[in-house]
Length: 124
View 1 (cartoon, helix red, strand yellow):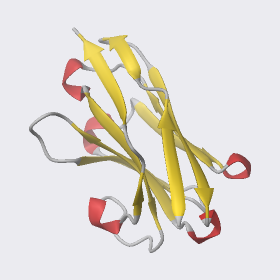
View 2: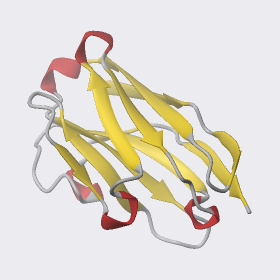
View 3: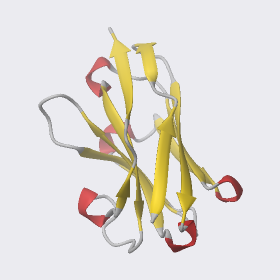
């Protein structure tokens, strides 16, 4: 089992920045990749970014490239999502996830464990 706890969400004005954190605990040595997804009211959960836990290779949704940065601190078993130039349409609950298989890590189906989510609200 892997437990994930997100933090760092909140209210920010359009154009502002937030940094999300996700602390992993438990059997983290089995984790192949970690990712961030978001879900707005009435919409499906969508991929935001992912990172290969071992190599550090990163993947981004086209909509966030150049504005969001995913990173990890292996010593702390923590991943981060730095979000800059936020837009009101990016208001959503942001979820951290961990994948044991590493297959197709840009899709939710690849992930075995999920955090409880943290609310990000971007005001216009």
